[in-house]
Image 1: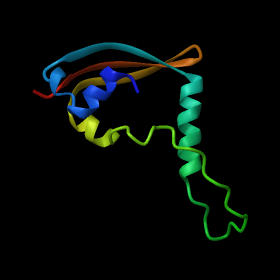
Image 2 (image 1 turned 135 degrees about the vertical axis):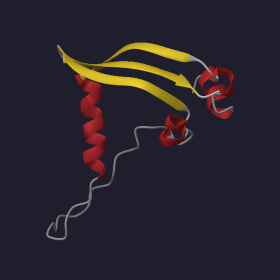
Image 3 (image 1 turned 180 degrees about the horizontal axis):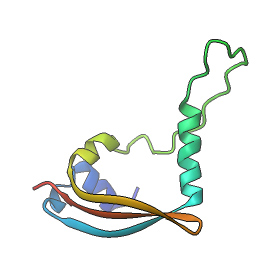
Length: 99
């Protein structure tokens, strides 16, 4: 993990309190497909499914990563919209970190 990223996680983003972000983020189809695969791999089969369980793949996030729900709780999201583009999804976001 990068030292700056580690510092931000360790200090719960306090250095960035009050910061604002406004812009567009492009997310590739590959990243979206990885997210879908992570979701599908986390689903449990129903009782009618008798196939042996396969070992689950390694989690996408490193074990020392903070809980995403706690990180999202630090945000004040004013706007979040998405639109599709060629081979990617565009997220328009306007958000700030709580003071």
